[in-house]
Length: 54
Length: 151
Image (cartoon, rainbow over all chains, first blue to last red; front, side):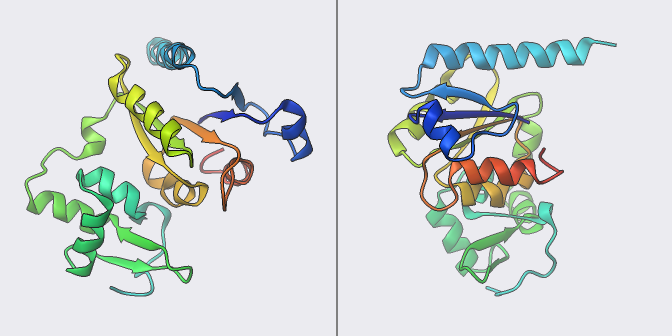
């Protein structure tokens, strides 16, 4: 499962609270919809590659 | 409504929010159906409702909801969105429902709700805010990472 965090917290604040598990993707608020569009497109493309890779 | 589950396996029940999504009904209607015993449910010691998945499937069958939502969503990217801010949550959910890519988004307002329904939803992607009351994003991610089923 891909984990994406969206937050207005700074990297310093996040580190002070224990940080994020390895592999977690971070996106700073405010939310950028164009970024999300690319994010979903990339995930779906990656899935297609996985499905069609022997 | 019972106070204890008949059996407590991860996939056999879900929370009210996910039950509402599965049946295309409001949370209030789900609660009414539980009170009328049309859906089997019980409450945890903390007072949270758990709805039996077999009773949801039975309700779908009885009301000719022939295509189960899971079947109809096959091939779509399953997204679980956890965000306590209603404006951001609705904006992202609407975006997912509108966008051309095949995304199926379930939106929840707390980390606790997400943990309850994670096993039923089995999302491909978890999108979570960090600052939330109760189970926040940090705790949610840590719990998931320590649960082999989701890691």
